[in-house]
Image (tube, rainbow, N blue to C red; front, side, top):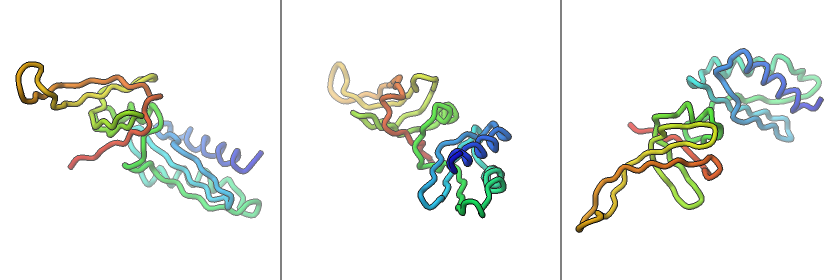
Length: 154
């Protein structure tokens, strides 16, 4: 069993005890620095990070392999990666980049295949001069999303 497989096994075991948490990223570099990024259906607390860190660290032998460990939550500026993250953020405003466009819109729905975005836009009137505000709605497959980030409004 490789070091990474062992760490992943311990991480999965630690996450089984906290089913509301899920793994976003696991990275182990050549110097055996382990970086775990988590998210949760109700956010991630400091205690959650401590518990997951202990589940990994207390079951690895530093005499066998020296390592460093960092367990953190996905930050606000971290792009969404998993369907579970999109579902968690329904009702929030996202900035979504596709191959052709950049859209700032409210996430109104998410399923296994696509997300639904809604926003208002100013467009030229169909009749006459000037612009009018129109409601836009777009169903966007995950395959077309290059990056999606939750925006914070104050």
